[in-house]
Length: 204
Image 1 (cartoon, helix red, strand yellow):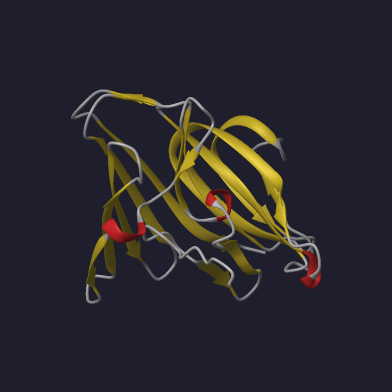
Image 2: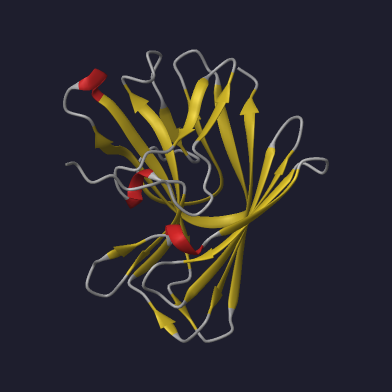
């Protein structure tokens, strides 16, 4: 029997536009292919949201969804709030340390469809960078026709662009690249950090 890891933590499973198709595309293959927090400890082990610890509140009239929970194996709680507007999705992530915490790395992972999913290509870019570390306030994924989706951050942030993410070996050679938004890896008990970003289509 094959083990199956469920989607976790209230991250988005997909963001699609008519001009571009799927931009954000999550899978349960690994922490690096889900939309959410990746906590990497000093030993290099990666932790993500505890599937059994999250709750949600949906206000359909206001267009808001709030998901709360904790990171598995770490003293770290999260609140993920979405505002679904007519032209954009606003995301607010709040992380709160339940005890002193010192990690090797802490990031918000945004998985992006590439490979066989994107016949017209999918270029991840922030400024002039298309891979590796960069500091920017905006990051986008675009195809060869100029259509795409932009992620507008709440200010200049350290990012890591990983276009060559996990890929399937057979079925259409599907691939999931990612953008990692770097967050503080050391927090004291009671300390909180907030990240805000907006997802909107680009005029193709």
